[in-house]
Length: 338
Image (cartoon, rainbow, N blue to C red; front, side, top):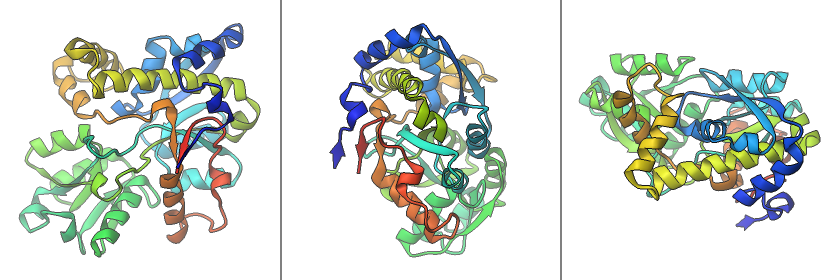
């Protein structure tokens, strides 16, 4: 079921919304900080800055970069960051339960027909027979921490196949990659711009797709402090308007190819300012393009997926059993699906 809430009905999601929000807000030129990872899936924020979509909404945005999701959630709770995009984790849910955080929109989703996150096996495990997810029984599966999105994805895959995987916390994505390449862990799942180059190295093999198990998985969400969601509605609406215009540009250019190769190349140039900055453009471009997944138009939120994730965290004893969707999510800002 899809529903339009009051703010969405006023036109938050479209280009017209950005214009209408910009008029009263421009005088403020309000400074805010937006948290991001150097992933292509965070491109809407980069586009919003580079193409002045946030500025049009009266916001002076500074991007602050993190290396993992959990510190970003803590930064939102402490007020060091105003808005951010990240996967739902046990830590984020616990902070919401304490009244510190609210999910206000969606960003990256698995979508049938669009290349998404891959399930990987180390070469050692692959050669020993781990050639599909159904062979995961007793195998080690990498994750950053218990209650991370990697933990959720791996558990869902294993449950669907009727097997039991052994989850190994390695704290950082870089450590997981090293462990997978060296055979210290057997399996992992990750976005395509990381998965595909790993597979090309021959040290890792793609053995499945997350979309086969979680076809409409809300991979990442847009979130803010509970205070911003409740008391700073103009600022929050302005942020979402600028962010949504960035989403629209990204999808139109990278998924729909509406502007042809020239449009793709221009978008790659923009994203390369923030992603794979340590590589020359010609080496970064294939990975940026391989990382293309559709972002949620208008920052729409798949509440059915979020609810499923919340119930999994509760069933695993990773968050308080009493937490509800109303505690975690403010559905008043964007279109919801569920």
